[in-house]
Structures are given as structure tokens and as C-alpha cells.
Length: 164
Image (cartoon, rainbow, N blue to C red; front, side, top):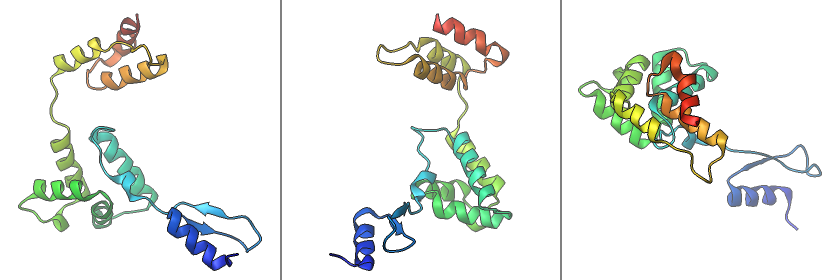
């Protein structure tokens, strides 16, 4: 039989989850440790605009007011590939001299190049529903593809035409 302290240490070493308990007799309540991997940019999963939007939310919740605070938190948690790319894009400026607005502009300019509208619309029109794909997943994928097509107010009609 392990004592409470040994049990906590053993659980943490196995799961990397910090146990929190009110007393020895109360069942454990697990609180996940902070995961910085969610702040690493993955172009296969999201575009740079949504990545920056997530960061804006993160910075508001952390109550980061100054550019230095925003820049430092971003530099700590954005991941090594993003940080290296940002340092290279900012040359000859040093990272410490960048403002949050400049960081966002550099990232958007690099990761969101100009798209050919005709090619994007062609990709939208060629997308057909797969046999194993649910209608909701297909509709969501069409909406994702439509974001780069600049359909404007004709989006709903275009989606209906594509469904038919």
C-alpha cells in the first residue's frame, strides 16, 4: 500500500497529470498540466488568420496589454519553427524590437500568399461528396473551400448549386 505522497508522485510520473485532492479519503480530481503544443502553428490544420485569431483570444484572456508582453508570450509558446521563421522574416530587426502588429503582418505576409481566384473556385467546383462522408462534413468542407473564393452574397446560391 502506497502512502498518499508516493501515490501522487507515481501518478504524475506515469501520466504527467498533476493530481489534486482535498484529503486522502476524497477521490482524486485530475487537473491537466498546461499544454503549449496547442499554440504551435500547423498549416495542415488551420490557416494563419485563424491561428492569429486564437492568439488574440489567448492574449486577451491573459490580459497582456503591452506589445512587449504580447511579443514575449508569443515567443515563448509559438514553437521553434514559428519563432525561427519569424526571426528570419524580421531581419535586420531583432525580435525584441518587433511590435505585435508587425509580428502579425510578417506572419500573414509569409503564410498567406495571394491566391489565384480562378484556381480556388475551380477547386471548390471539383469538390464532390465522398461516399463515406456525412452531409454535414461535406457542407463544412465546402464552406472552408468557399472562404478563398470571394463569393460574397452569392455564397448561399453557390453552395446550393454545389449540393445539387
